[in-house]
Figure (tube, rainbow, N blue to C red):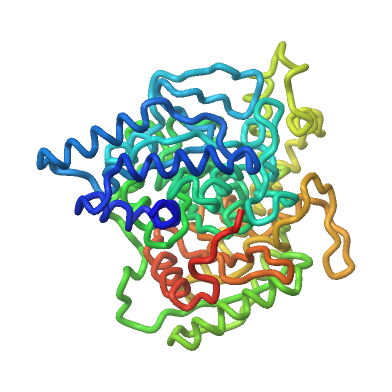
Length: 468
């Protein structure tokens, strides 16, 4: 039963608890036992929450008393350690914030709790969430449960590893350029970066600048992403980017009344892609076509004119430096090498900054035109499967690229604020998960959730878990 519990998704656990076929206390205890058994190898969890079992018992008591309960009642969840959690350590992956305990929950954490979920643990990340490897001077490096010598990604790598390894059924990450979708692809789970502002960033650090940052649910199934999104979305009265009513949906819904139109690509300015990754995207396209979706191979010429990765570094790094300088002043000896390098990077000139902004506007225009013809875009999440720890360069198809290339296919959707989803659809020759990415137009989350659910039903890798 314990094995069944740790690999049941949150939706199933909620139903089992609600119908009193299993208790919340049993579910929470099974996940605590799993954390204690395998986290010493994976190092995904940085804080195990005191009182989780007591909260589970209270959830069971509420059911026994006939109380009305939320959709995640009694289900444990985990949270990346950049989210404020009331009374629970939130250290942001940095010795500078060691011992920090906030007094209030982030909006997204509070909404999960209001839905009945029980905070179980906080998970690892790079310092300040600013790296594609979850490693820091405070809590060390997270390993991929599929192969401990490989990365779980970043910056929500601890969260992805915990969910993949059965330490948590569902959780929260944040995404600046890659940070929920990339780790999800590395570890074989699913993650949603909704339209910018759909899920408030209140209580997640760094708060400024926020225009590229997103909160995103992470889970093992698409229905769990949809459930979490329904709980998390909507304005909170504090985040000025979160203003669209929760009920508004520009997508096709869950039962489109016409054929769905999807374009797919594996290059078109994205740079070198591992052949196994490219083949997985093509297989996903073929699977959708076999299910009645209108599929066409496409290109995005704007990727070839304006490199999204270059636009990001010229825009965002300049904007975040003031916040970094403020919190690290006087603590320079406690900073990670990644943070040091970022602060030491050359400032963008005003002229280059304006040119980058104009390039981002061209990307938005290009996607606006694209989504007049197609409902979604299918493409890689990452150019390679999970790689060895600490790499600074990759060689793909004989071409050597900087490690930052890992973000090339994810970053366009942060710059433009478009919703994008990552899910597993394949396996590499050395047994590592390979993901695919789906993107849709602004506020069309229902479209990609619908397509992803269909693709999940066609997946050759459903219900596969690491054997750690």
